Figure 1 (cartoon, rainbow, N blue to C red):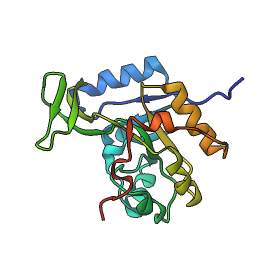
Figure 2 (cartoon, one colour):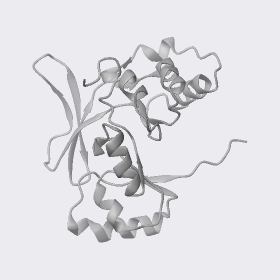
Figure 3 (cartoon, rainbow, N blue to C red):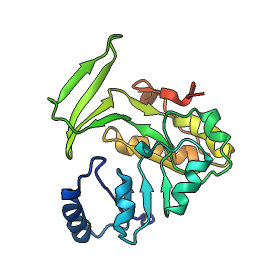
Length: 201
């Protein structure tokens, strides 16, 4: 029998004053054990719950992590940072986006759902969300065995956000983290490494 894990609720990235009561009531009904906050305004609402700031909080350095800690929150670090850049952090108490479609943009506009292409022909997913629309990468980020470079540097918290091959993906990461053999060759065919190689510096 597996160990029980805390269940966190995810709050919207776009939040207006008129949404405060709606969100408060929803959290009271759901009674989550923690929150993944899409908007820093959640930190002012004092739910008394463990809170993780979503990666749109743009945590880029140790100073920001220290600031988030003073606010009583952890953070999913910016997925724009490379593995080498992440390994250089003094404070390793953050969460790394290891797998899933990265939300590149969340806008307070109503766009038609579907796919769009940029001038280079790369496709992106357009999806409606609370108070607007989000633009996501068409392909999922998949670090797989690359996370061993991070665990070697003392980073041991990872975020998986996927609705594809969920059981296979989670089992693969569990085996990798447990130091067991994990054949991910089939899974890797449909995934990209994103910024994890080049970073932002």
